Image (cartoon, rainbow, N blue to C red; front, side, top):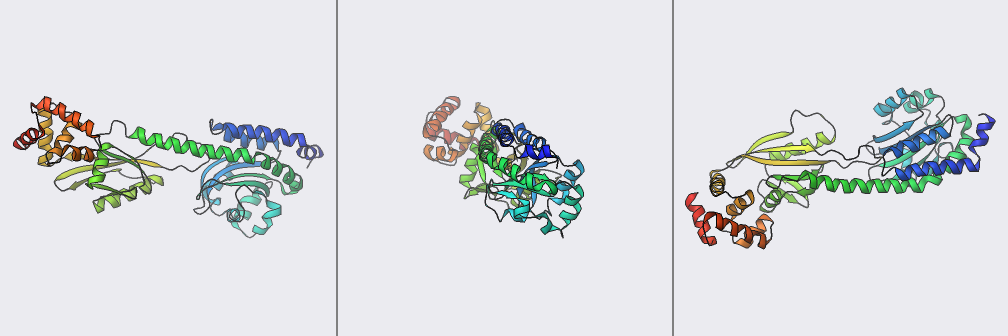
Length: 382
């Protein structure tokens, strides 16, 4: 390594200035996702001959969820993503160090210890100048870790080890804080996605779940069906469809959508009793696509009645004849089953006062004065 470069890399002002600039990029990253790649670019440019990678890894599944890489040949980046990530022997080393640890490969896990592996011989060595490395590992959750790695020539490891590990140590707190903020933002955005997806769907059986079918949000109609255990149920916050064949189909569909497996259809028509329904599943879009954290995928499930039983049709025809709104028709449908107004309010997940006001409006539209008169009219016309 040239003397000028060697001297520069161990200069205290250089290390301080580089750390400050990289730290500022990490500070911006939760608010401007370009900050992640900017930090990687700064590190790679500041250390001549180095290659830098910021990755989100699932060590158990050995999958790469996010990466931002600079300084590697594009062909090697592609082969790493497509295959060599899965056979990377250093993944097993991360389990041996605590979160936040600074790892220096020649000190902790020398590349020569993996000389027998496919990764070493077919991916690492052919690049000739990335055999040594320093890294910082953060545990973002139980299933994903954040790794910031700086690779450099083995011949310059003595100098690079000292300077890169010092920079990583200085920016560690800012990187950790930014990852935690990004995770918080993603959680908040997930809640907003759930609420937004259900807007204008109060009259549908609609709910938002994740791949494990954990319930995030549900429409008013879905809540009614959860309580009555008609079509769907929610036990311990896990949603099930009460028709086994459709429940199995939903499970498979969620798994395929979460794994980006192509599907011929994300809807299914089925019969339950006298009614014919259609269930539709859709993946909600991610608000920010370039965060180095795992994305908890959310799905909107909608169940619509395509043809109703004769009683339901009669109530709808009754409502249409008197100009009732959908919420007023639902109240009539429940009252026709001899529910009290309080029981009807509980079933529909509305307050007693809301139900009372709706009933008052129904009286005006139908020319009735008491609940018993309304129920008698309903049964006479049904």
